[in-house]
Image 1 (spheres, rainbow, N blue to C red):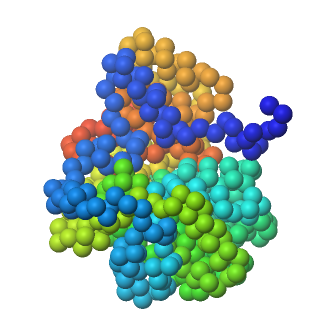
Image 2 (cartoon, helix red, strand yellow; image 1 turned 120 degrees about the vertical axis):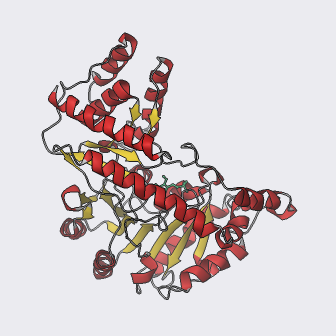
Image 3 (cartoon, rainbow, N blue to C red; image 1 turned 90 degrees about the vertical axis):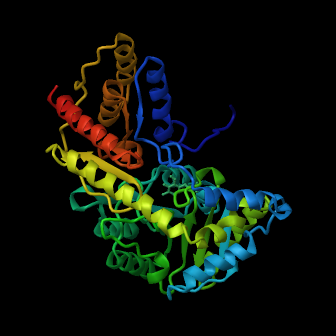
Amino acid sequence: MRVQLVPAGTGELTYEIRNIVNVAEKLQKCGVTINWENIGDPIVKGEQIPAWMKKIVSDAVLDNETWGYCHTRGVLNTREFICESTNKRGGSQITPEDIIFFNGLGDAIAKLYGCLTPEARVLMPSPSYTTHTLGEISHAGAPSLHFRLDPENGWQPDLAELRSQIESNPSVCAIMIINPDNPTGMVYSKETLQQIVAIAKEFGLFIIADEVYNNIVYNQEKTVPISDVIGDVPAISLKGISKEFPWPGSRCGWIEVYNGQTDEQFRKYINLILTSKMNEVCSTTLPQTVLPAIMQHPEYQLYLQERINLYEKSSNITYNFLKEVPELLVNRTNGAFYMAVAFKDGVLNNTQSLPISNDEVRTLVESLVNQPGVSPDKRFVYYTLAATGICTVPLSSFATSLQGFRVTLLERDPAETERIYKTLAANIKTYLAS
Ligand SMILES: Cc1ncc(COP(=O)(O)O)c(C=O)c1O
């Protein structure tokens, strides 16, 4: 090619959360039974959508209006409903003009970073949900700028590092947080959020708060939405129904803009995001249309609570088994449905393995782990996958140099959860001792 096609450093990026599925599928063909503890889709993990929710959707399909385009910002009734629930908390006050719907938050995230100039950088947590990091670095054409979530301190953010990154990188225009967090399951406290908002104010930055797991918290934890503490700092909250209804296949999420008019640059930025949505006319009408009816249904809170109780149970079972392995840094998850586990420094190496009796499986895994550049945690993940069928994701694929793995807490049968984590803990010990 006469010109460089992709930004420097981005051509080799892989999306390991999906990549691991290809490996697991190959192993499945060799006869390995897979436990899919890698994927954040409750439906794939057997969640049965209640009949009342399906009825609301099927009735809406019979309504001609749901077949048409809607307003570029989204269905007005739904935006009004969302405003009411945000405004009644008493924090930042919004109008339907401050909301834009997207085809899932994946779409919103791509536009958020895509509408910035390449020089304007967003500071990311590390580890972080890959879609944010890839969106940001692909756009900037440069490695990510990040602040550490500390596994030795309950995955709380390192605010000293956050501040020093902002001080030493004048190109930083925003701070991104995910609350509750993916991949760590950490929930930001009100005080921490206030400190982050204060730093943003001090340096003239805006905040991007991915709050897609906002209503999924447990172990006595509570989420404080950014709108409660934002004051007059410009901010964008990302919310959606993929995880909460759960309806990931709806491809429906939205942004709420706080203090959208207080800064002229920020106002233009939001307007550019809206314009790029206008290019597509609008996002899918049907899921937006049914959102208020589903959220106001008398069974909604009960159904959500039942699911949350299950995640709490899984979080505790997983924690109790894995904390028995002294080489691991394990934190109890209090929100979302993930647990990120880090290995202590220096315990992994490139000669460890697990016994695998099936020759075909062993050959396949050895060919994968012996490729150049395979990180120690990827090696660990591939070996445990092949030896036990338990599919996890290497932690290093979440924009961190930490070595470890991420699991989801979506298994519906607590007895099976116990079996899986008992097996995983035993195999980690065997792997480390090999
Ligand atoms: C933190 C976070 N944000 C956004 C998304 C994407 O959500 P959507 O299905 O709305 O694209 C995910 C999906 O796993 C996520 O974990």
